[in-house]
Each structure stands twice: as structure tokens, then as C-alpha cells.
Image 1 (cartoon, one colour):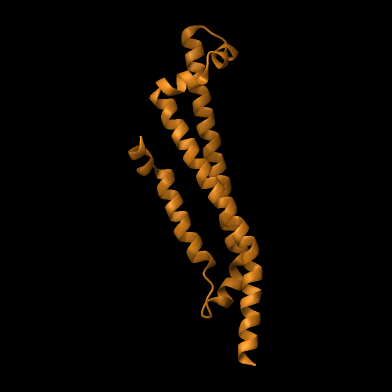
Image 2 (cartoon, rainbow, N blue to C red):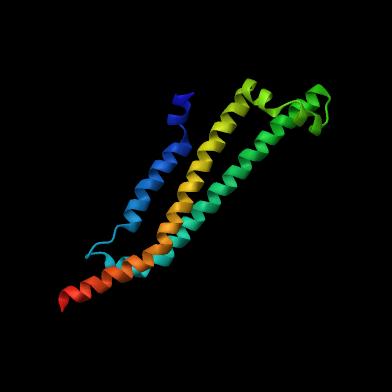
Length: 140
């Protein structure tokens, strides 16, 4: 199961987001003007990533729900009886549900990372302002 997680597109995506955030928040003397002008655009970019990933999680939830409903139809039970019959037991035995649960957990990690990235970007304006003040003091 660990190999499935390592090869997951969600994990690769998370690694790309980590790399991208490092580039986005790297402030140097050479790029401080650019960073001060693009802070809002960076926030918008990460907000877009956030909503794309939330939408992906909703798709996973719907697929999982449809699989569970298919059990109910196959066995002639109502949806509520399937819930009482223990979704956990079904999830352990159905490889589709196992895969969806893994992808959902990985997606949750990605969304949490993006939330933290957005917090960092919210503070980036202050970092840029402070860096500009330091440069002014150094030139005095």
C-alpha cells in the first residue's frame, strides 16, 4: 500500500507545490520589486489551487458515495441500511474504496499544505515591506 502512496499523483502534486511555494516566497535584493508587485497575483494563484483541490475532494466523495450506493442496490438495501451495515467493513474489502480513501487522505494533505501556503502569502506583504525598510536603512 505504501508504494501506491508514493506513486500517487497527489503526492507528486504536493512535491511540486512545495517547490513552487519556495520559489514564490523567496525574496532577494534582486527580486524585491517584482515580489512587491506580484504578491496579490501569487495569492490569487494559490487560492485557485485551493479551490481546484477542494473540487477534487468533492469528486472523490461523490465517487465513494456512488460505490456505496451500488452495494445498496445490489443487495436490495436502502442507503441508510448500507451505512448501518458498516461502511468501514465495505471499505476494507473493496479495492476501489481503499484507493479512494487513500486519494482522499492525500488530497487532504495537499489542501492543508495550500492553506498553510496561503497563510504564508498573507504575511508576505509584511516581509516585502520589512525587506524594503532594511534596504533603505542600509543605503543611509
